[in-house]
Length: 393
Image 1 (tube, helix red, strand yellow):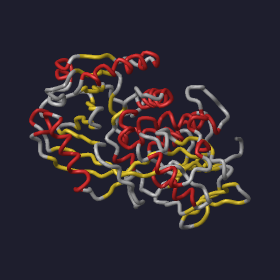
Image 2: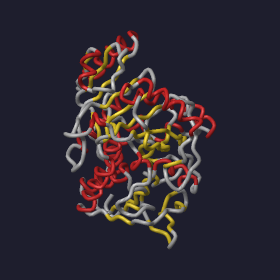
Image 3: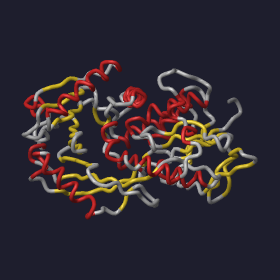
Image 4: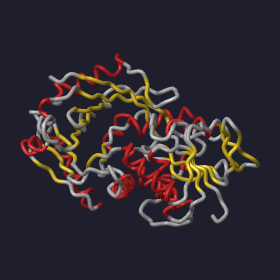
């Protein structure tokens, strides 16, 4: 790619990862463009609760997560391996954990079944009294998405990448079936390759050159409690806690509990200026109430803040990484969670540079796998995954 210029649109954790990996391989002609000012993350990265679960029912997702954890752990304010508990509220779920233990062993991810009492001791207040046991994954944990993104930006910049802030990309520029740049308010920035890493705004930008990105943005609730006396004093560390049968997850944020739920009908989202939306009381509040009844510490805690964040679903729950078939020079790094962003950036950089470490099959994540799908077919396939995606991530 000598003499080629790559423009990455989006400086969230995915775009920062792409820039970091490109420059780490010695390719420095990288320009990252973002609509925000440096130091702020109003997009999905800034709203992410920071849970990182490596074990997945999909082997490639697990590999992306493992690679991401390795990257984050080397960054200031990065990965904190507090572990994860998957709590079973039935004997059937407890028995199903045996499959997860086997899957983990095949991937080199430690996972073991423990008793309800052991789980309660690891995460006091977050394990239901009626639990039948839990799956404990000690190597999972949390990450500060803002801090890691800043560290990746610093790394990319130190290796030659340039960043342009406060510069919304209005459309892509195409000529003879090839992308030639991006249009800003003050003109066109030329590029040989354009990588879209803008999350939920990817479909809008791609549509300006007639490309349909197979994703559906959906809204999702997350809440923070008021400070808890149980969490004050010395810094307390405890695992992430998930309830797979109920699609509920929770963690501690300093002296507060944070929790989210997928236990409601999916709500497709219209695009806005940020990834945050007005909280939908009628849809989300009943689901949060069910979550609070399930988790002991949440039953009496007051909720201080409610967030409605937007993320994107794909038809098969896998990210979109690679070139689009319709327009030469246009690449996607879309549909990725923080959990997999480090690995997604590595995979895309390797493909662009003609390298391969073989840790993930690029064909499985290629945007071309949905070539010819209508928007209606994409939505019908993607939306049913809203609750199920919790089990994979």
